[in-house]
Length: 519
Image 1 (cartoon, rainbow, N blue to C red):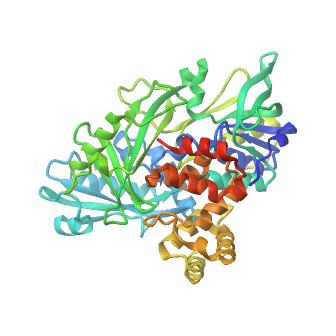
Image 2: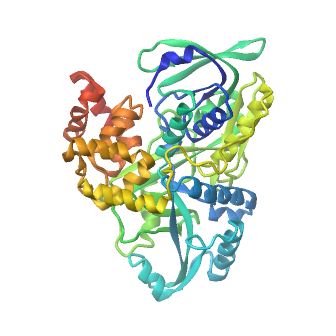
């Protein structure tokens, strides 16, 4: 993946503005249909909401309470497809749901809901179908949960991903098909002729050069920045969600819990050897360019979790945190949790198509609707080709056999088993490039941080080949070290200096990049 801002001087069938999950799927879908595509992102790929999710590919069990069966069925259909089409990128994750004496939803109601969830998923069987456990067995399964008033519980299946790397893989797939994809390329203004957009001024965030990009159709997948315009404010409602990163619990499964204070659902999720705790859901009217984790958000999540834990977490246990803004359709519901997470396409008077709302899980299907609309305007009859299509980095062989073979190969190269597992998930078929780096320089097989499954060869590959412009691109999205470890200035400088042959930064640039990574 090589960044080339000058390639935007060409003429395109479609310009997509916004490099999150919706922009990436739209560009990839359109390129597969043979359109000449440009995708621009004002920051880094997935640098806003699309790297600030709960890292789940799921149907949304809680949406059954609001009778949003259509959305749940749609998301479960996508979950099933992605598990087949991208086993390296999307993997099964089981969830536990405890039932306590004072639980809002008792055993019978949860049984009914989980049976419906399985039915909407097409009765998928193991490892997705739900199971019930009595008090003793559920407590044994999740020994860190308070069990004084525990009645039992359930487990059910959903799936997990690395959201930022999912976006990156789709961008890479679009580029392999001929799309021009440029990060740090900001839309400055739409150029109009008689009320219709005829071009877009895009500015290079590296050189400040500006270029007028011409396309036959224009799509905005700008997320929270949609509200920077009057129509956008009328279309959208924003909600902030935060996650805390905490030490690992003794489980490979996630837990779905309900906050005692307000009845909201939240998750405790294993991820890269740490635990994600989240998320909040509060109306957001602040600066869309600067979304931060507030002290009240931290207090809320810790209090909610500690009502269920035998050993309470404190603020000192928090390793990292992140915040994101969900875009939802405008609604007069009293609380954001009551607003549908479904999606819609709006076409402005000037002809620009705007994606409003949606979910990480169902973005592919929504993007197909966007490209259908674009193709109809262009007179192109080619249909969507993303449904069921293997993702670009999926290995061509049987995944289970391939995984076994590559894990053994990794261990022969001196890569530990846990790091090898995550390498398969992070790079898929590209893992051969990591192996090549380790073969040339064996010392790069060691872990970067002793209790996290990342090795130096992985970091080097990301820096070389994944369009890194700034140090946070590398250490937050290509490899999420900034939220999974407490790194000081000396450690950050070490990474920047190690990668000098690739990044070519001088002393002033290193100091600036290190500063941008510090809290």
